[in-house]
Image (cartoon, rainbow, N blue to C red):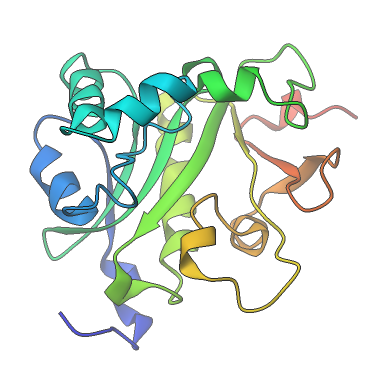
Length: 204
């Protein structure tokens, strides 16, 4: 498929949590490289040793598949014409063990949050608004599921343009467009942002 320059298709996207039913769409989107370096979106979910070992013999792919087959929340797919063109990881913060060890993204309160840790967009659909649409779809999904706080840790690039390989954690401007607000600025270039589906939880 050639690069898409007309973004009118964004209105036709549908959003689905990763499941057994759409697993093959996820695999097709991630391709032979597992998105990037055989990651299979397990970077935040495993300790360093297990993650590195999982980069060979499809270990990380198998680990992700096991989560899906156990009906664990893993993330959201953006579907266009029955093809997955975008992905973002989305699960309870405690499922991402690397966040528990982060010095700059420690919990700022004791509220239950779900975290968005990474994105992967089909190369033919990048720089075209898919990330923002995906976030808006994620917000609708979270609202329907009663998930009250969505948290993420995007980057504010110090140089433009940012290479695609460095955009996997998400760009702050995409979150801003989707209605997220900075909740903590311990890291100048990697702020913690939040979206509250329940406004009563916002500290006055």
